Length: 293
Ligand SMILES: Nc1ncnc2c1ncn2[C@@H]1O[C@H](COP(=O)(O)OP(=O)(O)OP(=O)(O)O)[C@@H](O)[C@H]1O
Image 1: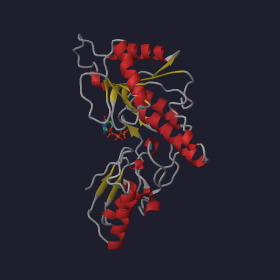
Image 2 (image 1 turned 90 degrees about the vertical axis):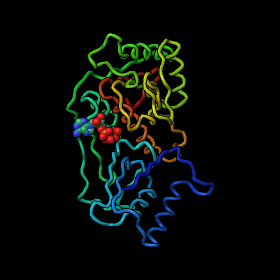
Image 3 (image 1 turned 30 degrees about the vertical axis):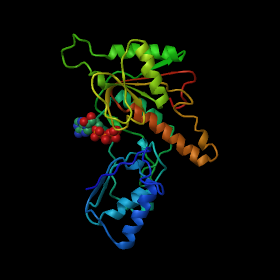
Image 4 (image 1 turned 180 degrees about the vertical axis):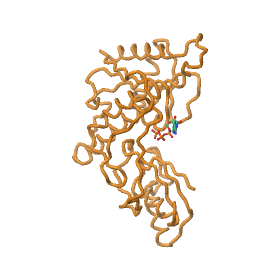
């Protein structure tokens, strides 16, 4: 079994090639020399791998029963471009299965999150259109939608919400959330800093989380990208306004195809962020409401 994690922050291992190029070179070497190193490889979050990384994974494992086990969710593709597995030599025809039951979040939160996906045109790694229907057997409150008049107002409302979510000393029935199970998710590091200091000014101490593991004891503030794969009992999506989520995407305006794909990733980012909430979800913005909402 092998593990590989590709993150946007991956830096070139030396000055000449980046990780995608290394994967392409390694795949070509393995194919040319007819070498494999593993009998079985399990891949998670495969929607975020690029073609050369997938080609490398195909090349490094010996063809046989259960050689490659790939988990992917095209709705959570927040990095990279669309890939079709058959184009990189991975044949899955007739062997792919869709999982539709969400164990994490409530039906109310899931419905809200699926509504964001509904405007997108998603395809899975087999190249088939992906439908947006998931189910949850759990239920809870409707997501809270908080329109604010200014940044200061949005921070005031965020502080109120977090205080109301914080465990009360008198709670001893075990149902109060742990502080670190409360998260504020923001678009970028700049907004993260604004939220951390704005909440501190309002008497709410929170912990900013970057690459390190989150420590317990305080609510957490992190980017939506950083929250991928994590879950919290309470989540506030802060600053969901036009120009933030979706981002301005100025770099993609020259090609319609690239722009559409970048917009799909923005949709996925908001979907990923919303589905981090197990129980309680709130979303706030000021200015122009996000067109994805
Ligand atoms: N069969 C199950 N019964 C009860 N709870 C489950 C079951 N499977 C998963 N869960 C719970 O659902 C949540 C999500 O599970 P998991 O992280 O494995 O899903 P995932 O598909 O990797 O999520 P994502 O990709 O959205 O981060 C976790 O809290 C996990 O404990």
